[in-house]
Amino acid sequence: MPEEKALEIKDLHKSFKSGLLGKKINVLKGISLEVKKGEIFGYLGPNGAGKTTTLKCILGLLFPDRGTINILGSDHLSIKSKEKTGFLPENPYFYDYLTASEFLNFYSQLFHKQKTEDINKLLELVGLKKHSHTQLRKFSKGMLQRIALAQALLNDPELVLLDEPLGGLDPIGRKEIRDIILSLKERGKTVFLSSHILQDIEMICDRVAILVNGSLANQGRLDELVSQEILFTEITVSKISRKELEKFGKTLTYFGNKSFMKIYDQDKVDEILQLVKEKNGTIHSLVPRTQTLEDIFVGMVKKK
Amino acid sequence: MKIRAVALNTFKEAIRDRILYLLLFFAVVSLVLSRLLSLLTVGDKIKIIMDAGLSSISIFGVLMAILMGTGLVYKEIDKKTVYTLLSKPINRNQFILGKFLGLIITLFIMLAVMTAIFIIIILLHSGTISWKLFVSLGFIFLELCLITSVALLFSCFSTPILSSIFSLSFYLIGHLSWGMETLIKKITPGISKILTQVVYTLLPDLENFNFKTEVVHNLPIPPKVFLFSLFYGITYTFFILMLSMLVFRKRDFI
Image (tube, rainbow over all chains, first blue to last red; front, side, top):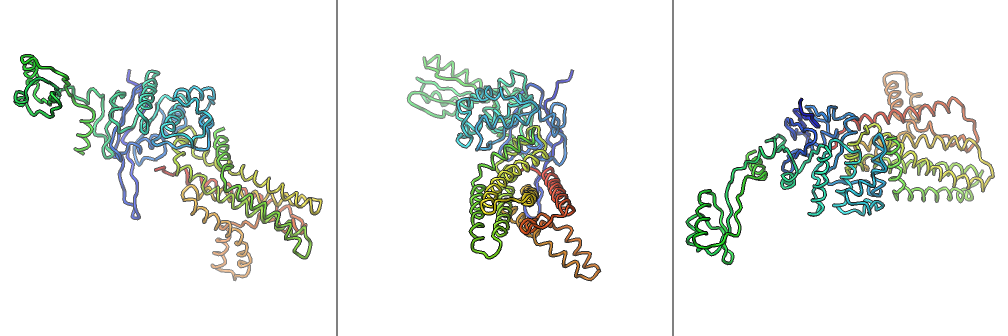
């Protein structure tokens, strides 16, 4: 039985005209991707790669030049697909004269059934319960991000589209929002997350697509994309003379009686361990560094 | 339901706008001044009060419609609130209709406040009110509906300042175009007459909604004129609203 798709984009093209002469700028150059039901899909790309443009096309805010978009089996512009979708924009801005609960109440009326009883639960989920009667104009950036997430979850959506959801949040806020995203997955929801913060993507996403200059440079499972091969090993030792260490490679830094080294040859790591044992030295840390998403990302952006 | 939600939100936004109260204040001052003006004028004082009063209500109503209507859609796009709103299961036509109705509700309330003050002034002076006054006020409201739809149309693709200039031009042209009717009668038949006729048909004729003379001088309102003005106002507003929806439906939100 084929896996069900929450989102399917085929050959998506979008261009804009710029300047007096109407010079054509191709922003999306044939994007094709599939997001399976129940997964967290990371949509990565540097600034200006076309991430937000893709999201706007999915939501029907921009009309693609070419290509098709399907959400849970329906056309992306249909009311049916919008009933099942939630969206959090980048740098959200809302009707600042409304209070948090008035705002959610207004948006809830745009769906078939009004879920007023859910509004309090949502405000609690995003940590804004005590601010339910505060006008949005008095909200900080982090609070606006939270209320934006609340409105995205208002209809208990099957597909949640998040554009830079962790931007503008402090470390605690980021952790809380990450936990909410993970809890959505646990409840069987699909999350499409656009970001350039690699650390967050690496922590929570099942699959990723890397967008560079309007084209997909790579996509797949994180463990498939990221090689598990050890690139180098970082070792911190003490009670071993510099002279003895220098023959293993370039010693990077000395601090106090400790030496920090970066060893590219795996055999030499074993030799250092042997030496430390013989000389009664101390190993403070030994960290093998494998390839990260950042390495792949930077490599692809540079290549393009 | 969805149109109602957008309309109520637009209404909430509009009644918080300070410019509305500033215009209302000046409208009230103007209405009160019409009473003073009547004291300084020779002739039937009530006619002066009615004429100046109805003109004040009309002008300040139009200013409210233009100044608020031109920002209606533009603000939603500029502040990007439209991104989340249109990502919900609402189509773009419902959004435009909701915006239009929201402002119409606001204008209706403002018109009701101005009318109440106006009636008090008239009652204090003469003690009677003619039903024709309400006909005239009804057509002022219809004109406001049309002006709002025009402001909304420009708001879909232009900045508030430009939209205000365009809408104000529409209003002025609409009140001056009746002169072309006389011109058509004087032109000798030929291509120029046909062209003038075409231009006159295309241009709005907002004098169709002007029943001030009938009210002030207590002249009869022929049912034919009444029905034509009503049909003209509703059809024109409907047409401009359709045009707004068409423009908005094709729009990319970059």
